[in-house]
Amino acid sequence: MIREAQDSVCKAIEGADGGAKFKEDVWSRPRGGGGISRVLQDGAIWEKAGVNVSVVYGVMPPEAYRATTTTTTELKPGYFLFFAAGISSVNLMVVGGCSWLASCCWVVVGGCSWLVVVVDCVIDRFVVFFW
Image (cartoon, rainbow, N blue to C red; front, side, top):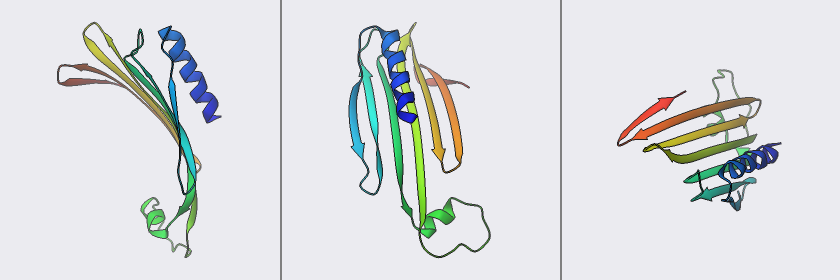
């Protein structure tokens, strides 16, 4: 599902640009999982666009688990299994002297998921945030 989302977003960005293509870098996490980073540069519309996927899993020490929970009950001893997946996209284009940076991130950790979207207009040294 997450790879299909990455493929769809990359296809739409390439289609809108009309010429530039994404380059792909596949990476792995030694303790479980990995990801795919894709970058498009110097396109007709996009100065730079990135669409990245991460799927990682493994064993979390009890101290790390305690830092991520608000539970006040005693935790069982030992290690905890975890799974986290996310897709993010950061895209930069220049329109009318303003550099527009659009970023989107969808993260799934355990049974929770978040979608964060930010669009910034960078004028000189000021950043204007649109939510």
